[in-house]
Length: 209
Image 1 (cartoon, rainbow, N blue to C red):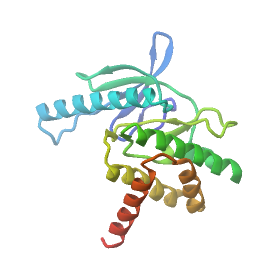
Image 2: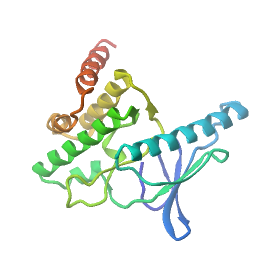
Image 3: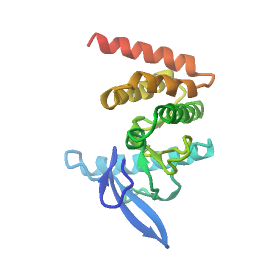
Image 4: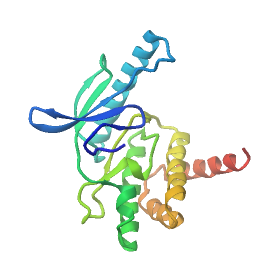
């Protein structure tokens, strides 16, 4: 997800900057899927808009840094969110010295721990879905784009979140193993062992495809 000016795409919609009573905001609109029956499509877009709004509110209550939700219009399948400046974590890591990179990843791990301990999963936990509003601070991270997220107490979706991040790191970073290890130092919460065990099982399933 990109929060830069101009129309962009997120996991499940189109993003466009808007002005909300003088506030810099971002409209996220789920597009009509022509391959679905119109009534089914309208219901799914409305439900997913509602669910994403609930996830954002729950994440904020849990102390997770996310954009402010200003409005949710189920009929129009549109969310209006705080528009935030900053590079993505993927972009920022390319400019960071090694100690800062590992500190940022540990901070990312702490956000993921808070997310999972609150009974939430992100569904697309990658470096592109975190913004760095204040590059001088290693812990300045904002988690965005909950379009594929959900509510759960199960370890499988948590393991999937971790696996998505691990694979995303391997695709873009030569130091992926070091960065993922740094992430895991921050991923400290009572359910971490179960999530990591499930991550190992997911890795094994991938080897035998």
